[in-house]
Image 1: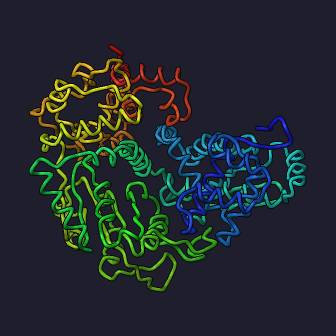
Image 2: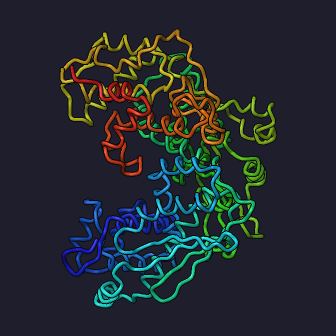
Image 3: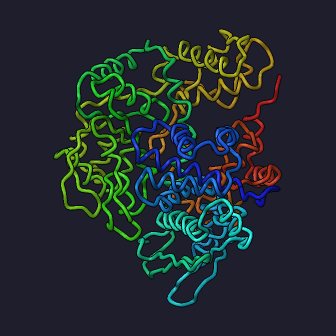
Amino acid sequence: MLGSGPHFDDRESFKVAESVLDVVRLRREEFADNDAVWEAFIDWRGGREREYLQQIRLGGKYVFYSVLQDLYRFAEERCRKNVARSVGERLARGLLERHLPDLLQSTVGQREALSDQIMWLLERFLTGASGEIYTLETEAVRQDDVLAVAMRYRHEAEMVDYLRRSGHNPQRAFADSLGVFHGATELLLERVVEGFTPEQFNTELHSLQGRCLIELKPSNRFHSENIIALLLDHVYRLRSRTESTAISTGVHVSAAMQAAWNTICKASTCDETVLLCGESGTGKSYHARWIHENSARRSGPFVEVGLTSDIGSDNFIQSNLFGHVRGAFTGSDGEKQGLFSLADGGTIFLDEIGDASPKLQAKLLRVIDSKSFRMLGGVDELSVDVRIIVATNRNLSAMVSGGTFREDLYYRLNVIEILLPPLRQRIEDLPALATGLFEKICRDANKLDKQLTDDALRSLCSCDWPGNIRELDNALRRAVAFCDKAEITSADLFAGLRRPASSGASSTPDGSVGGRIIDPAALRLAISAAPDSPESLSHQRRGHIDYARREYLRVLIEHYHGNLAEIAKHWDRSSENTLLKLVRQFDLEDELHAARKQKK
């Protein structure tokens, strides 16, 4: 927005600034986190507005546009290259997460022209991402399916005067902004348009006017599989936030967990490849890090890669894991290190290995065999000293039999196999585990007066816990948040979670249990299949997009305990009234009330 003083600032500039810090941190090893990069920038900039700059990251609100230009120059100096496009790519990842409902909604138009789908999606994305400094206008150029997006300053004369007074070149500032827009749009198109290549996207710059041209080919189509992958990865990360703290409080009493723990301890003393197997929520990520931190490689980096989140074009996958050389593809204006290079001397953890594509499986096999790889577009063999730990909630042996996972790769990975048992098979551990979790939650919430009764513990032990430790953690958090009494009894626990241990939870195709985590197969059907039974409600038909939207909203309700303000941040910033209408439309009122759990 146009500030009350001689400054241009807006919240979007803050998000861009965070993306700049991300890029510098990833390219320069001396920075432990983004705060360290920001402190280095303050020192580099000198004494001007030092107090203001120190407060920016605490407030998380606005960044002056002139300060953003200084940050670009600082990043160029540290990285020795222009970083605008890379910043745009980082920014787009956040946009994709914020606009997941839009991505789902865009699949409704499967039978529309691809150009119309892309135009609708770009308008939705760009309106929210351009802030008040620029204006972005989309238009269809009806020649060979070429789409165009025009970009300019919203208040050009005032902006030129402002930039010159602050010592910046207006043309250079606009060129950086256009570069950010280029990188963000290109990554978006790579994710949602199957068969899209960087050569189909070009940017034209004319003084303070920019234009992006998108050329579509007959072979291009809307990439529904990527939309599914993005959604599933987001749900996975939502459910992973409390995993490490939850598991660290556990005691290994049960025979199943003792056996797993003995193998984990032995694995930390050697350098062999480890395969961690188990249902979602059993602690695969936590134990992978524990093995690294207790191994001889503990002083080296630990790089975690969620293969589901890295699904994209072949160029994108190869560039992310193995890096690329300058000129490998359009827009690759410099050399980029891949994650395998960043993990040199340490450990790389490949989560969800069962989701790896056949091409990626072949490349991983080569890295394991030769300890070397080629960067995208490169000819030189790069050696790497990396320990590989992989994890999956799928049955890889069955996938090998079914022809969807390479047998030779499976045997390379399965040197040390560790099966992490689900919580229902280690109920002996649950009292100590629940007590440790409960005490930590109370400390974090500053509610040290609360106690978990024996009755509550017996109730917890009677559940089958299809969501495993994550689900247990959520149940305890809800009870602590909503119970006013000092003692928490079984009646205060979330009733919807109390299922008899003998109920026999069933597994979904991705290895999750009980259907509480979104089923990828159901989502694929919901997004790609033709609508069935037109007489039924749309959200009850697996062949309708509303079914997938309902499942996503259900997960958000559960994760955020029915807090509509928090859910709105992941639902295109919708108002609470709009979300309430959706809750009623999708018959989720009972789930919402249960998540909130009335105070007793």
